[in-house]
Amino acid sequence: MLATARRRLFSAQAARWYGRAARDGRFKTLGRGDVERLRAMAAPETVLATEAVGGSADAAELEGFNVDWLSKYRGSSQLVLRPKTTGEVAEILRYCNSERIAVVPQGGNTGLVGGGVPVHDEVVLSLRNMNKVRGFDEVSGILVCDAGCVLEELDNYVAERGYTMPLDLGAKGSCHIGGNVAANAGGIRFLRYGSLHGSVLGLEAVLADGTVLDNISTLRKDNTGYDLKQLFIGSEGTLGVITGVSVVTPRRPSAVNVAVLGVPSYEGVQRAFRLARARCGEVLSAYEFWDASCMGAVLGHQGLKHPLAGEHPFYVLIETSGSNKAHDDEKLAALLEELLESGVVEDGALAQDESQIRRMWSMREGIPESLGRTGPTYKYDVSIPIPVLYDVVGDIARRLEDAGLYRAGDAARPVRLVCGYGHIGDGNLHLNIVADRFEDRITRVFEPFVYEWVASHRGSISAEHGIGQMKRDYLRYSKSPEMIAYMRRIKDVFDPNHILNPYKVL
Ligand SMILES: Cc1cc2nc3c(=O)[nH]c(=O)nc-3n(C[C@H](O)[C@H](O)[C@H](O)COP(=O)(O)OP(=O)(O)OC[C@H]3O[C@@H](n4cnc5c(N)ncnc54)[C@H](O)[C@@H]3O)c2cc1C
Image 1 (cartoon, rainbow, N blue to C red):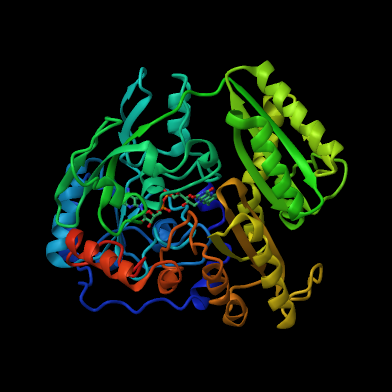
Image 2: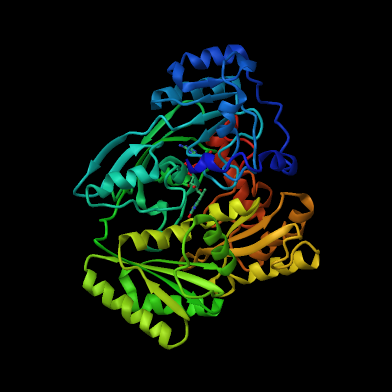
């Protein structure tokens, strides 16, 4: 699985590097008695407890729950619970709340900000056994399912019925719909279908005290007071445990076209985007870009052939999806011709069949994993106005050069790559710095500089990955003191003992 493939690579080094929040002494240290009580609330095979707390699992069995996908954050939980029903989740939380035992809700553990793993000894509450589709309405396309359903499996399920999930991302084979909602994931269909704040119609969530908030509505319209579910979308497990999701799925497009373009400059990436919107209009469904360093990493690690004849400073993937192939083909072909003739792009390749479409997408989607295989990766996921979006990559590279830590192509320096890719239509850049290790002298060069840079351009320090543990101390760069104060008050209402996902977000 994606989540486990890379986990062990850099973890020991990362644990040393990462300066984490001190353990909050108000939380109870789990004892054998607690584990006995919690064991009785779920099926035996769903409980993983180490010998230290009276179980028989060894630390290696808990490793995948304690370490994040980037192997950057490591906790030391002694207990993993994988309940099968909402009732079990409620009983577990009621007990943990009454005993002040801290809990981390965990989905597929593909999050990139250390939100889904314990910081210290919190109990891991994994939703992976809650993975059933509860119902699908083939007229409206509304899907109701458990929170632990894997995104790709849901997409396959609705595809058989002529629909598509409104979100898609590189981690789809491992991430859960509940994790997507908790993280308010964006991804590559955002340009077309918008945010989960629009497509999630209802949620079932269990609060810290075991109260079940049944808001699993299947209504498109419901103006009956405060829309509480919106608070849980993007709450990163700090307000409640999402156990069920209702989501409206669009019709699956019957005609999909994909092209990859080679572009000489970032200015060209923007001009091509403007033309793509103007010429393809309603059928434009994705516009992704990446730079030459990302391309080098992905070709080096994914065993893919370069789609174009030569190298280019930037690459763009354009996707159109619609219901009339001849119409979409004509629009895209005309766009490509115009882009090539005007010199906005230098080269382009249009996928000729399904397998070429998949290969082009796997190139874009393989970037995060390929960079991770190149070395420990500092990842910043930021929203910046499109005209200056790529400038931050150059500014960070220059700072690292001035500090003597980086020179393009110089393998002897501790920083190997400074690169960027992202969802340009959404103003979302993934800035990545690949080093040979995580260490303070490197981090200090671009933190908090990167957050100051983003704030000075009125951007957001998190476009889609969330705050987690990584950005907790930097929230002020995107939220005013008044807003943070109200966020704290909301936290107090839903989780007065702060047992849910402590040390994260706030
Ligand atoms: C290769 C790769 C590509 C990615 N691409 C994108 C992308 O394009 N766009 C994007 O937005 N993100 C992307 N991500 C990160 C993204 O946030 C996650 O992949 C996904 O949304 C997290 O889902 P998960 O089930 O793995 O959640 P986890 O990682 O397990 O958890 C994420 C957060 O949600 C909380 N949580 C999880 N489940 C629940 C629940 N049921 N109830 C309450 N809280 C819960 C956790 O406590 C944690 O704070 C990518 C990650 C990878 C590894």
